[in-house]
Image (cartoon, rainbow, N blue to C red; front, top):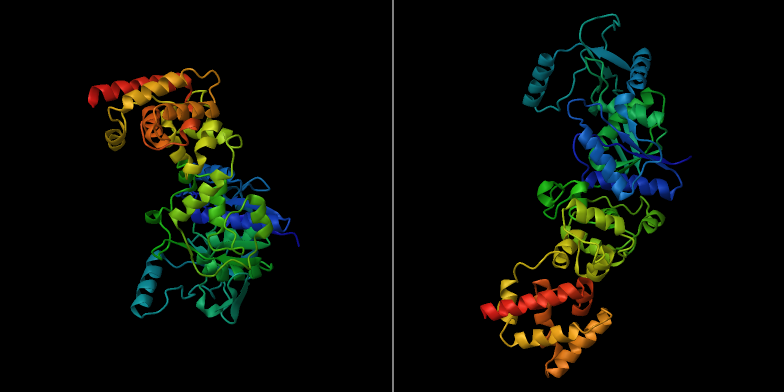
Amino acid sequence: MKVRTRFAPSPTGYLHIGGARTALFNWLYARKHKGEYVLRIEDTDKERSKNEFTNDILTSLSWLGIDSDIEPVYQSKRSDIYQEAIEKLLDGGNAYHCYCSKERLDALREQQIKNKQKPRYDRTCRDLVQNSSSTEPSVIRLKNPIEGSVKVNDEIRGKVSVQNDELDDLILARTDGSPTYHLTVVVDDMAMDITHVIRGDDHLNNTFRQHNIFLALGKEPPIYAHIPLIHGIDGKRLSKRHGAVSVNQYRQEGFLPEGLLNYLVRLGWSHGDQEIFNSQEMIESFDLESVQQSPATFDVDKLLWVNQQHMKNTSGTDLSDTLNYFYTSHNYKFDEQPDLCSVYDAMKDRCKTLQELCDASKFLYENIEEYETKAAKKIFTKDKISVLNSLKTRLSSINNWTAENIHKEIKSTADEMNLKLGNVAPALRLAVTGGANSPSIDSTLELLGSDKTLQRIDQAIEYITSTV
């Protein structure tokens, strides 16, 4: 059996963390077993489905590197096969027309709730003589078995079951003839030869319902694996208040796709004590047996740590296109020099996201309009004027502007003035960056260049002279 998995989002909202993890687990399982992973857009809800959401799903998955092995399938273009399935169910006596009005159904539900009964259809139309030529409005319902049970051997949860008399006669087609979710899912999984359905365990009840539709259509259901939901650190289901924003938002905040994927795979799955994975390691290590049954906890701090590890392990050259995209899309000013790749390599160990890196590197491309107040008050004292003048003299003599030569001249200045480097470097750093923190001062000056360095030393001397 060739493994074939699918991710089937509805374009009624942006792709969020939970959906991305489901897509990742399906993709990894298919890759691990030399199978295929496919994307199916379930866009039959005409009112709520929007192109902007479809585009977001496609671009977000592409950014993450979770690409379908075939062109994405759109349910909105497959109405013919759904109609064929409905006719087959009706002809086989496994479905029936229901003519009950909305008013009757509402009243029935209200009475059942009042009687503390489980709200469900009472099968009034189930045994009516069916008249296919009737023009009276009707929905089409599944003639769900009344006896026996539905048993599912779930790859994660083990054996689960429900009695058939607990299940409703589901609506398969609305009064306008349009198919419902449960029917389209089953028909598509059959038509697309899906062998494994890996999805959130909030779909478990759907699995029981869909199981009987498969059997009514003469097909054995696929193998199921219901992964645990993601909760916030407060134990409640993940929502926007926990940071459950769209995948694209994480991209805009400067997370690397490798970092986000690594974090997602560890939400509810583990492989020994290993924390950091590249894509190939995830594929080789992934299995459903190691997916936990309890909800996973989303922790922003852990996500930041994981992303930082990937930033440290990635070179600026490898991220050239990403850096250009990020700086440009966020309207950061940057020149050809210093090169963004070099800036990244110099600053990546100090930053958890590209957003942090961009903010920390502004001084390289923008003029210093002001200094950090607290740092200036502590560091920019009168005696630093002579220190900065000496530094300017020595630095201006450098012919080959490298970190090594810059370090020599800074050290020589300190030795000449009988000062420790700790009494020299902070003033120079504040002068050229506007703040008290940066990579090593020699690397910082190499990136900045000699002209900007000397100009900013003059600016700092003028500032101290006029304010202290």
